Length: 235
Image (cartoon, rainbow, N blue to C red; front, side, top):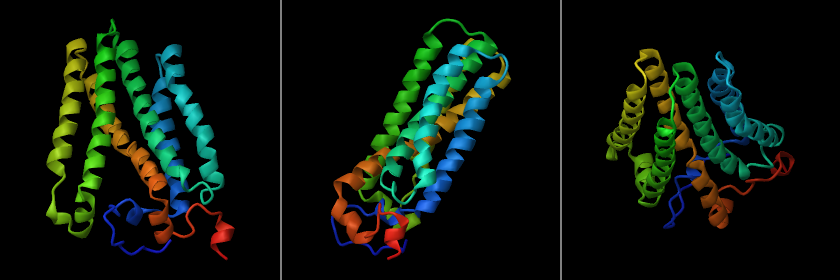
């Protein structure tokens, strides 16, 4: 996939100028499923003390995402378009999985009782997912992403991202502090809070997918072979 030229259009080009090869898409799926989902998500649910309810609450999206991900391992060129939808849903699914892991740590390992902790954590999870969708949308259509691409020193994202991220992590830390005096558990909850924020940003691939669907001509002008099987691209 050759580096496309910038288009003289009002539409932002950031998404289209940062596309990847289908083979890289396949590698991303493998890494996310094996590392972020299986190793960091499933294994903690299998660890002692085992809890059937939390296990199956987390395993349902795991099973579904593994089955869906097979198409991007077998035919990454043919399913290049829906890859962005998959990655967005995967970001949400893994964020939810980490939420379940953190709940297991607090309710099973620590022995927290009552629904308050779970409710507050769920609200924070939804808020993080919504925040990154809005933030990403505004950054794209304000042209900030394109300006950053041309001149990385023109705008500093770190204060915005850092402030929101620290706020989320501190909130999680404080609510865990109120129900547990275990430093180890609080550190683990904070670590999974960081991972949830990363996955919440990955979930912005949902908007990339919608952008691609809404701008087919712009996509075609920049990548004529997009979404076609590998054999057809080689003709």
